Image (cartoon, rainbow, N blue to C red; front, side):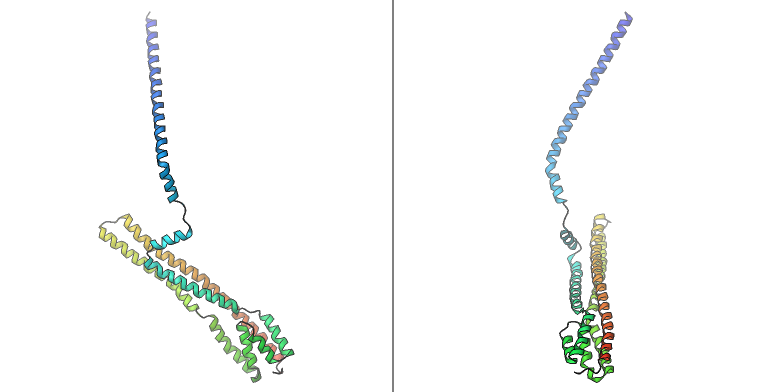
Length: 271
């Protein structure tokens, strides 16, 4: 009898425990379903906002980024840097066009001049040089024009006129060099002014606020960044122009030596 009572007691306790667990599980499931429904509703409500945020955070084009950074860096300080870039690029493009037009096929010109001297004389050779573009042809014309005064005078004339033409080739390079130095200077000046403004804002606020400090530092550093970028761009053009001028000058010197040899060979040619 005692065993039966004990068994029924254990069975009742187990039944109550299982019932409690099942009820707890049912309540948990109901709460989970309710939470899931709430989450779905919140996600559905937040979906338009997330779409708007995604649209707002869409990647900007390079032009838009450049424009926004230019405005953030204070147009009052960024505009002089931009002006330096425009002027420097204008002079660089002008020099590139001039140097490309000054490039001549010297060997072909030497062959034409020598053939004209052999067949027709000085006048025909001068006409060829006159109709040929570039400093090499101008030097040849200057030498042929002094042919009757002797080879020594021809050589002096070529050397003198060659110096004049080299000066023309190097025209405006000093301005480009000035802009290369001026661009980072303007950027550093904007940086210093921006730092002073940041410290003034801190002093006025009476407290070091990260927002105030970051804003002033951002404006200050953007001017330096743009100034350095302008200097790098102009420096690349400047080095290209220098190498181009060196190539033309070397070609002039080689062609002049060959030209003098041709004049020595045909020193008795008629006018």
